[in-house]
Image (tube, rainbow, N blue to C red; front, side, top):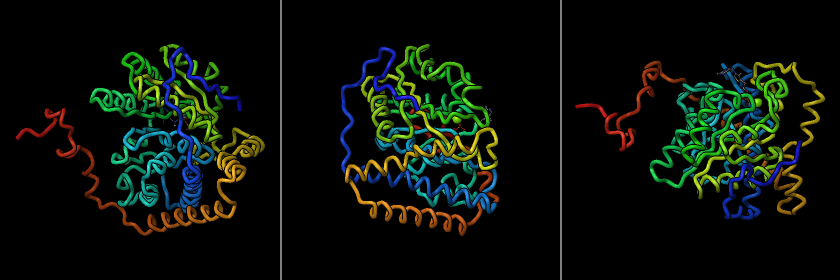
Length: 354
Ligand SMILES: Cc1ncc(C[n+]2csc(CCOP(=O)(O)OP(=O)(O)O)c2C)c(N)n1
Ligand SMILES: [Mg+2]
């Protein structure tokens, strides 16, 4: 794991505000959020094996510190958009674990009414805009969110996540060009887990680090260690401050690792067990646990109790999803067009002509 460079690069000034120190309870909460994602997905894995979850299911196991760390520096009304590996981001945004699990089961009680599945979690109320299956497709959409935030005069920012494979998509570069040109309050976050499906980064991407690509657009760039939540928070805070106070975009590369296959259907024959075992040695949850114990923020017993709580939450989500009904057939015609009361005021042209 290369050491991450603390400075926002490419000549952009860094905003002067400082990342506030966390209170003990806030640190414990970060631990809880990471562990909830881990335990939630262990249940999802079990349900997939039992064929209660069908279709695609991409686990986030190993990458938890990225979603928890980055979103922890946001305000509630900032926007988040990501790809299909989206369970962690939704849970951190505060989407009910029951609604997340029910979505995986394809039930009407799911956060996308059972019609999205694993790849299409959505929770507009919490400013979580998906959940997208086309590699890189969410990046132009996230850029649009940031454009709207600026155009409407809000002080909000957008975090737009992608994988290390997605950074090679043409639309990503078109979007970054416009974001830099129009000075949009967006942070592009590459979750570099070293693989795009079965292809290692060494075989898919020229140029190291990936943040070099920001130079083409004179955009700020920053790297973070995705196994260390404190590093993720500190670096994301710099980028978010730049977006919020100076309306400048940043490209972040956060180095992380996924322990399981690309999706539940991937046996993962392209990498060795030794490699995975070695990477598990720097597990983000274990690392943070050790740090909290060293700092005497919390006792081991208290952390074990949190594990029991989140495990019970994951089990409750499983039971809720299992017992929920399937969507009625007629619902297939719903959620296609925006209801009139959800059309933004600045687009009266979209309202139905009476
Ligand atoms: C446009 C497009 N091309 C190909 C695919 C098939 N596909 C799904 S995921 C994926 C790999 C993406 O890897 P990465 O961006 O690193 O994200 P990760 O899965 O590692 O989170 C590919 C090629 C797709 N969904 N969309
Ligand atoms: Mg990847």
